[in-house]
Image 1: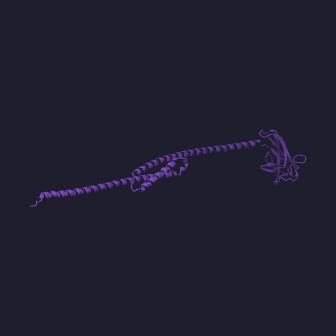
Image 2: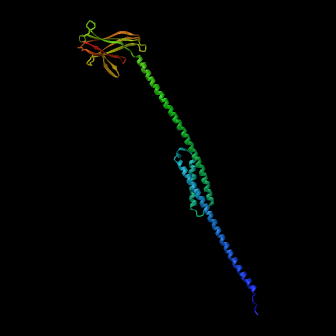
Image 3: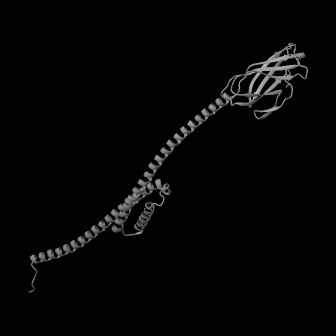
Length: 303
């Protein structure tokens, strides 16, 4: 008679089979979950590296933007090594960023290197900007100093102009002080015998009479007094020697030499012999010496 399995054994066998199936399924699930976790960790690491790279890229862009504000002043840093170091560090950062963008697997070591290079770049930029600011302050000081010097020069120029004007005025006053003066000028028509002729149409001579007062400022020596007599018609009477006056040669009616020693000379007379018919009216008397017009007076001679 064949042995039959008892119900209890059948149940045990079934349970054993179910257990084996469950264990196999569990192992498969654990392996799958472990794989998913590893993939998530890798994705998380890549995202972290991407984020760090993006932050460094933005930081580099900000550094570049700040540097460009000062780049046009680079020529002021003659023989300076900071600019060269900055340019080299900038090229290194750009190379690292290009490498990281092209790599499929991001490198934490390269990210760290990039961080270090950007940190170096920051330090160089701060040093560079500090030098530019120092130069700006120095230039501002020089501009202020130049403005002050310019103001002082303008003040000095003003003082020089004022002193020049004073000297010119003083020189002019001294020159005028040296000028001879004349007083008591008169014009008289004379007869042939030297007496006064009231009718100018009968006059044989015209006499100009004047006095030279004392003047210690006038250089002593011989002086030539030039006389100009102008008729009522505006014609110069006579034709004596010419003399220089205001850059021109002026004809005179007559002249007289005197010796001047600084003292008053009274009763000086200059005569002109009438050689034409005189008419009644206003006659002009002018006296000159040393390039000056001493006087210009009008006298009325009647018929």
